[in-house]
Length: 287
Length: 252
Ligand SMILES: Nc1ncnc2c1ncn2[C@@H]1O[C@H](COP(=O)(O)OP(=O)(O)OP(=O)(O)O)[C@@H](O)[C@H]1O
Ligand SMILES: [Mg+2]
Image (cartoon, rainbow over all chains, first blue to last red; front, side, top):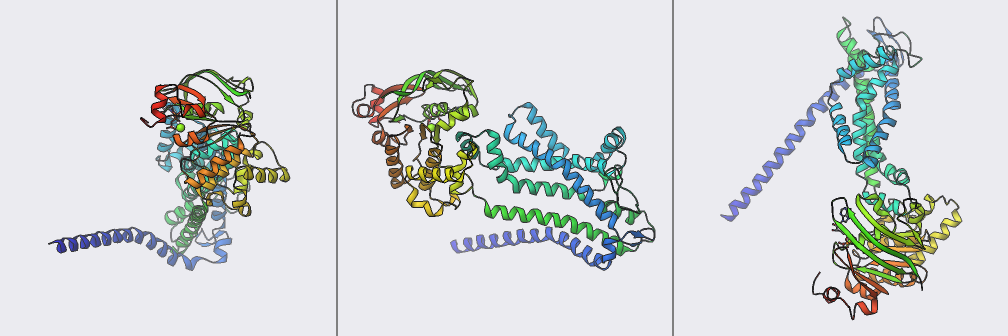
């Protein structure tokens, strides 16, 4: 009797375990499949000319340099606005703000901002930056729009990273004659930096891949040259992919997959950097 | 001998309405170990945190009274709290080493104060580690992460970190509560050395430790200072019944 019971329990455990493993595999398969599919389909398109040339023949041939450069500029532009602002807001929320109605409201707003569909940000950017502030359809307007979309991600991950730094460090710093800011600057921020960077990169990565927010605010259908000021419109990888997949007849599929592959590498590359930073920091952590 | 610290009618209520100190008046002697003891929640930590204004970080509803250090009321809003905290150092119950090397832990306070000269910093590291009786143990690994030390070593590094600032008063809140008897002994004997130069206020983690270390001892019960006397008498012939009950282990 006892034997059977024990055996059963053992078998159940085994079964449960196998089931969980299976589920884990099932979730990973589609992701891997997408990556492999894009890789296989896109690789033939990749050449030096594809990466460094301008589109030709109604974008059916030539390269995608303006879109690559454009996405790069938009990512930098987004970082310029959202990173300092996001980190400052996170420091305020985690280190200085009292827990009152106002800060609770701010937190709720941040969480909800993260849930707003990106096309709504696009419309907002059109209204505020393009039309009202008269930045026109430009890298500046698009970067600002992307920044607003990215801010909630940066603020909440950075705040979490700051809060994870043990409270006693702050108390000790103050007890040794430090101001609160000195403790933040010398201990809390350096300790939270890897977590903050991870959040920043994940936020920017999302911005780099978005089409809707830049659709009305900065993206150009086709430009025969590279943008040379923040007030120029620009081509961008996600929008270019949308254009060549839907707006151009007789498009060779390999150009589409090539473009998708470049975007994927750009985004996954950022992701890889974030992951590396995080695991390095974990290994070095002293608390 | 003079009173380094004079506490006059000190009362404090936290924002949740808990009255943690009730009309405390006492003087603290220079060059002596003064022990604050009593059961949990008596207000000992609260009193320590008043002495270096660390309670500024906590939500306090009301406080009244004065604390004079060298004749100056440090509860005055105009007090330079940064200077006060350099003069009144604090060691906490759980050793909290900062996430940096041993050396950087020791120079942290001095660097905050603007000291940049390497010779001065090195000098302070050696002097304070010797005072905290840990120099010989760790002098060859000063650039290792402080977290790699044992708990007892960490606590002495925390003590040294306070000493590096050359304070005048040292507050210790149950500094040996997590330590083994040998480490505890080392900290206690370091205190006996330190009192020659400093004013030491200790919250012990047991009555035995109170009795071992106290030149003067104050018994706190639920925010009240019940009895304050020389260590010799309070642990042998207490005047108050409540003190006697506690010292003899009949409660708490
Ligand atoms: N930050 C705080 N906010 C609210 N109440 C507090 C706070 N710190 C302490 N108290 C309360 O004040 C009273 C005195 O606490 P205190 O920590 O000073 O006691 P203690 O004598 O140090 O006790 P222990 O031996 O447990 O360390 C307790 O009732 C405690 O709950
Ligand atoms: Mg306490």
